[in-house]
Image (cartoon, rainbow, N blue to C red; front, side):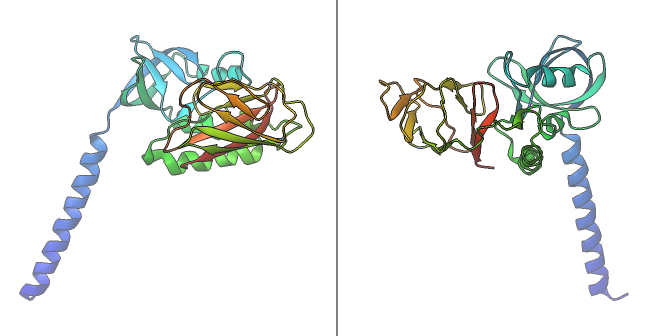
Length: 244
């Protein structure tokens, strides 16, 4: 074997070994641990046997009294007293751990796939998988994606910079009691108006025929967020998102 060929073979082996070393060490640095679920608090929060509370990363499930709450709760309760694999990614503002949960399926993703919850501030690493899972749930009309008989009768276009939503009525329906929500728990309840189009501003102000004020200061994230419009029976009237 000539020296040049030997050199290239040696270099190739070194690169392969270095790549394998990087892959395995990178995988090993992820913080996985075996834990036991003590109890389920709600559809996206659980308490471990050791007392730590975990908020599932990337998702949000319905709150109490909201459509789909009990279904999401029941799904997660199936894992009470079970051993799961937890990857902790940080701590949120309420002191709860943020994490990915595997049993062995990736439960955070499974909740979205089944329409038991929706995406919330999805990390870049999970973006493609969660976007695909949610689109499949929407297309199937699963769980929280069950359409209202008035689906499409009220649409919304978000201006995330100016913090308002332009709403357009496309049917002659009474929208009193319909709700508008972002990806978090922030929710605004509409009163009826005869205007064919009007605005919902995030800031404070005095309601008029063509303007409504949420009074939150700011609602819409600049990177990614979603808008949900539901009728008074929680049927989905309109959904849109950006950043996914």
